[in-house]
Length: 246
Image (cartoon, rainbow, N blue to C red; front, side, top):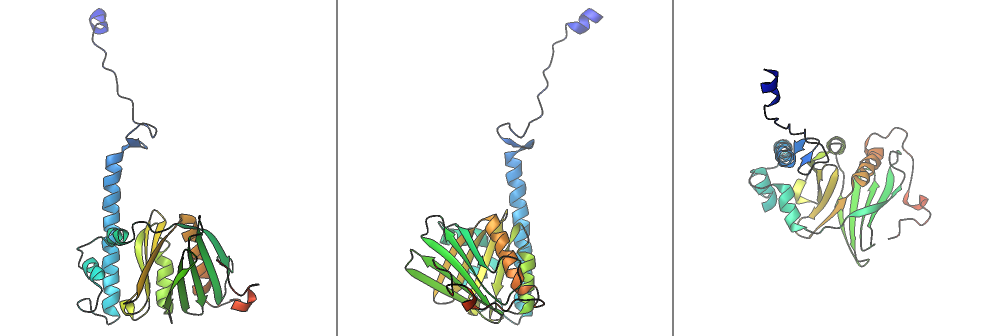
């Protein structure tokens, strides 16, 4: 009997996939990870769509009339807003060099932030004064387009800061006029952000932010929008040059 047992063919065991094995990440097939990621992103997008639609109707705006076509399709669930905006701005620049006044997390009532691309050809600036926000996109050191969001409600600012803490999601920053005035859209995927700005009937702009840049931006905005207690009386003239230079 022992001899018969020894003569049985040996069936090799397949080693458990490791993170270094091609086609696997932490032992999970790449195809499975892609499927799970897509399902998760679709669920988050659907939740954002429902939340935004509710906020719009509660503000007294109609989802049936006056909406830009892209937003109409988004609220109807007919398009993926991330994909659609990505098609419109397929090569939006990455602005990764950052300067802040004051530093992120510091409380203040006035401030300015500047993002610049590696080659210096594109830039983004955000300027805050009270509840007003101005966002400027610069291209080639020659053309700048400015978007203005005035009298942002405290509830809108707080909600925006909360939603921007997520590693994935779509977040709008707009005034009570919604799409009838300038507004911003942030699409965040694994903390990488695409920032879109829209000015109805005039112009549009887009850029990309790194995870570190996005985190600093949210912390910087929080210094203005997380309450007035202890805020500095910082004014534009407090900066040595009065403003940042491109």
